[in-house]
Length: 355
Image (cartoon, helix red, strand yellow):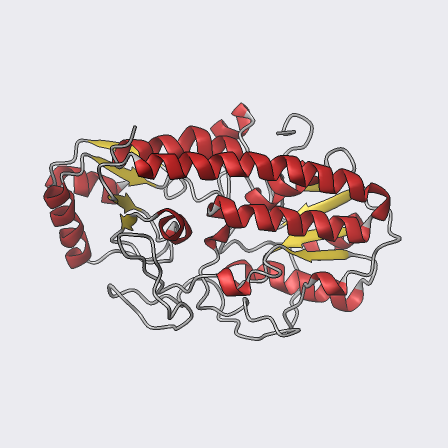
């Protein structure tokens, strides 16, 4: 991590609205631009862009420390700042609708800006909000419907953009955007970023490709750690007191995370959802409850407290959805790899009773 020389912006800067969704690699027309600065739409993309670009490009993340990137809205003239920087890495999905708008404006009005959609080419690997896994990690076939389950409407997070462009449909509101939590798909996104930067800046293409190859090796290590963890796990269900954001991990490695909360961080769980969760904790003998440290920066977690008070569980551990970072993790210099290894993997090892 290069957090010592590149800091996250503490205040947001804004966007100009656009009516179309854009951002494919085919549209990059900035091959002759002098790319020495850029923006990425949220923490993980910023970290990956930094790792791939090395010293060639100085990337910034407009989302402030302590804030989650999905559902975030900027203020001010962020579009102009990004246009001045020369490259924008984002996800074309409504959970980041502000970034979709910025990308569309950049492609319409600034033909020297490289706009890179990290989801490019992943359409057939994206999961729907209602996607469920069985105990062996096999997903249901109907991944892209917009039905509800467990009483939660899986179209509730982000703006309801449903447009398509250039034959791509990953802007649909039914798509779960948390693809970055799957280290295998993360490797494909990193390679997409490298390819986009190489197209826009051929002079440094070899650097981008080499850095991406090195980083994907690290991601393969994360994948192996999760694989080994689940092979030794005695428990295959965990309880998470936070919004539903880890489906890609469940689908990849074959375990279940139950949450009484829906897909939106703003959604309040019902009394019946909480009661069902407490019954699950006791019936499965779950001792540790997972929680989202982004839910309340002041450390007040009433849902966690309720579950602990009413169930046999005795402990808690945080996990992170990695759409943002916290000040303590930033001070440690923790990027995606470090947060996976220092926070998520230990937590899942504990709650799944793995070696």
